Amino acid sequence: MKKKLFAILLSIVMVAGLLPTVAFAEENYNLYVNGEQFTSEKLSIACGEGTASYDPNTKTLTLDNATITNGGKSDESPKYGIRVVGDTDLTIKLSGTNSITLDNGGGIFADGSSDNYNIIGDGKLTINVKWDALYTLNGNISISEGAELDITS
Image (cartoon, rainbow, N blue to C red; front, side, top):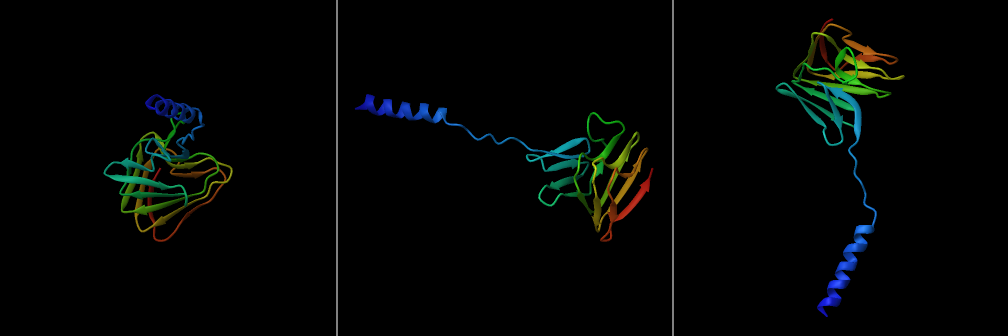
């Protein structure tokens, strides 16, 4: 009886091992902040004492007292503190005092064929960069809801 039960159990384990498994691959989002890419597993990035967090459902990047001092994608030159790759509209919500400072880089860069970004919130963003402070290849940039920008470029 024990041998029969063991054989059945072993058969079930072997059959279960042959079943296809669902692979939950990490999804990469086309958004880089402070030199790091957002993914489905990493929706918050430390930026100095503050954070940058991303909600992929609303395509909203929230800067909360973020100090951004590193550039985006590894293959780009110059680097940008916030980099959007491809056709992605983005809302940037400011909370508290935020900054992008790059001695040899740019501020916010979007390179898709239809990138629009809206900067909102009651916070402030200071951009002090060598290259473009705000750039979109084929889209629009709007600033509303009391968001304050101080730009040196």
